[in-house]
Image (cartoon, rainbow, N blue to C red; front, top):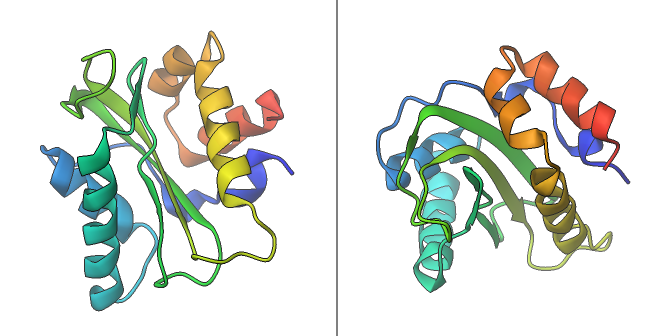
Length: 150
């Protein structure tokens, strides 16, 4: 299992428009193309998770994640906010790169934690934060995932 298997061009947005953490979460949820009620439920679940502690892991990267009944399989998305925004990250620096992970409460394949771990591992690669800043297309993002083979 590699990260690249979970991402497609339609869940990658390199120019998030929102200016606040809450609005960015909503914008990221929108990439999953769920119905309005499911989006609302998912937003509340992610907010609850963020209230426990920020998912901003440092180096300009956040990984908001939760389990929810609104999805029937693991779903991921990637968004970039070039100017950065306050995500209350552990290093207190602005977040520019956001990986969203949502999984159903029970998964037969049990991919939620392994995917979360792989995104964290990918994010800690020395050159990744800089390279994420430099990509200009969704295809380049997917190519970076392929290259890293995580």
